[in-house]
Image (tube, rainbow, N blue to C red):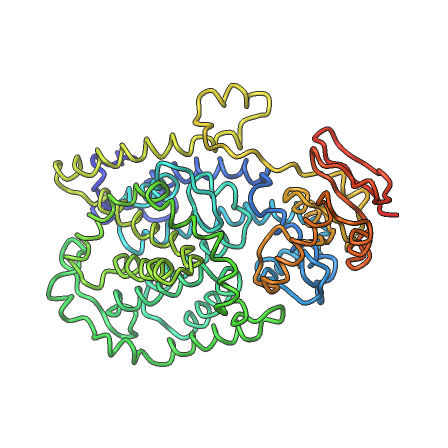
Length: 544
């Protein structure tokens, strides 16, 4: 009888008899299918509910502008014309689907979230399989990706801890990370031929346009793969393996030199050219404008937290340093080691230069560490090694599950949330943003709405309005413009502001509405009619 489960975690796919076809795949990959299926089911519920967290209002505004005007959508937040780096291939594809089906922005993001989960789970599986045949490597890597982070929840675009993944499942960063995993897996699959090089070059361009921070790690990973696998990626070359499928010392010494990798020839060069063409031809924005130093500097302040809280956010990754060191000792050009060192160098540069925006490379640093640790445990053959890896991994997994346990609240029915809150760690729970859906019945797309509270500003953008000030620091407009408008709004609500100054602001920005948050009052000298409100304390006034 064919066994469904291995005797040990170290049993590899090559060490078992695999019946051909789908039944054989199901039996061989049962752990991956079970763990992946459970995770996929959880995220299906998350996708259908799609919590309004973090910057989701901004992404709603972006897709809403594209649906309203696909050719000239303008800035998504302020009535200043121009364009935005948020008009990416990801959002444009969603816009085209929405135009064809007549779907709303929210429905499109729910659909995209489901697609992102499928792409990421399959991409992670393919990437791990390009590195290891160990049966338990993919499910362990998935567990690591979700839970092997730190003692404090991090929820940031591009970071795939369970809570963060649930928050940002519909974001372009998740889409870009999923494509990255597929790109790496495809690059490592076999010798690089022209047709596949063109496809991979196109994918790399799409990733770069969809999420620039992710693209930095993607490119480093591509270089790491080319160097580490130069014996298989080079057309016509083969790497010798020993009887167990492992690379031999002699094989490592016979690998083509790095110089020969640089002379790969037409497929590699054509793929690079295709990538550049995709980036250069994108009509909505120019990538080089986004990557200018002054634009990145405007984002540095908000990214400093990625360094200040490093120990609490990424501390569990320290265990993986042992696994990475062992890989380095076996092979100085190991793919995961190169990915770890390359993206780690980007993170280090961010700290030294005080351009903390480069801290957005932390997810790729952690990915390399988590995958290395998962493979080390799955490939352990000696019982002492299995215990040596299994005990600390069990401890950090248990700790990670507890730290991320508030993610359960995303999927339990509303009637059970109170009970569920008593069995999970709610000390770091984030409450979802109030959606203020009633705003859509009053604000017309393109109306300028004055709001002071960040949540009110978020919802104005999400429901099609423009703000006087932006709650987000974006690379789409100068930082000086952002501060000037922020200060103008603060001055409007200041107790000492003159009636003339308030009237001038309303006229200068063509303000049609004022949205007040809980506890805010309309200045006595402003003439505006109350229009709508809710029990949370948000009130909308039409300016006379």
